[in-house]
Image 1: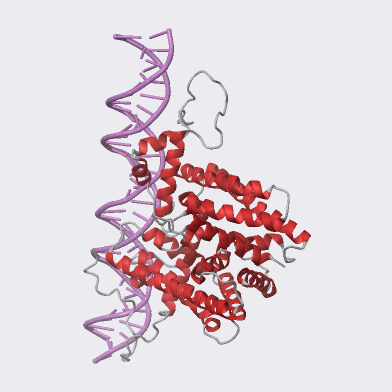
Image 2 (image 1 turned 90 degrees about the vertical axis):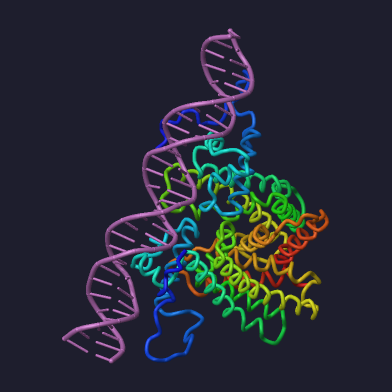
Length: 225
Length: 225
DNA sequence: GATACAAGATACGCCGTAGTATGCAAATGC
DNA sequence: GCATTTGCATACTACGGCGTATCTTGTATC
């Protein structure tokens, strides 16, 4: 396909610093701006229906810019998903890895997760759509690699919930259920927020926290013994 | 657009019976077969990415058949969604409208809802994708009408949950929360099943019921006071 | 101030697919 | 048994959009 493309590894680093990856997790400012625009476009139309020209509109630029930083539309979509997974891991990871009461930790994870969805709706809504759907047919080899990578990140985040649930069962705080199965409705209750939530102009922090509190309380109560 | 189309109201009724709508809810056998094929295609690729040729493949027919019964791709998609909503209403309606303990009724609704998702996965997964996403931009007038109609059906089903939750709060069975907000994680936990569930060849009825039992127990416990 | 390269704009080729026009055999009516 | 309509299949057109080739401008380097 694109074997002749040589310069498509993003912009060169400035200066003489030879550090191989100065900002591995999120790329440059420009790349993040592109991801933001892409997240908005994919959120509003879905991957297949959203055109790169629409992404460029949100960027106030043209397609040329996008293709300078990303090789294909699938690449861009995967990058949005990857970033969404990173954001999620950052939000819930600290509580997942902490010590202490599993029930309290699950509550904090759910609370933080919900607030994240509200704050970063475009990314999380795109992530909730999933990319398996769209890339499931006629995939190239590198698209399969992308899919595997993102799926692994997603599974990693889900595993954080599974682990906490398992701990909670061990301490007797939670009902004795299969942790992997029990994690499904938990994730469902949380991720569904990306579907129904609509940002309101004058919404206060307090109102958002009320939503997050209800969801966190709901999932903890749902597992309680 | 298609002002010249005259014969696109589906097949004529046979015989001389003049009853205007002999089978309003689901159409003819052939239409249902087309919907089944469309549901499978939309499930596997999403609306925008699924081609009508792919739908025709599942039908073991060609596009000509589809366009004989449905005017546009959007029409077909809306019909799949409409049927999904009808199936849902049939599954949960009886318990929603019954007398008796709201908690027990919510449990039965959730149980039936989950089993429905498992049994009719293509329809319910397509419905969970939603159509607002894909039709949100550049809609024609009749597409807007379709969207409104499906949204109303969806809202009706959600309202069934809201009502039961409200009753449960009144009887003291459920925590005192805003019913509309509380219904969100309930729907999320249930609908999420259409995302993660994958049919296994030798799965028993008992195994499916185990999933439905866990989800129903989860949502009831999540609201319990 | 000439050179080289980074960053992005523009224009276009090519492909997939929604929708249409038409053909055609089998059922149906008279 | 002839005419008409039904129920599709086939062939084709139109168009939107991905990806690419090429051109332009700004900026660092010597």
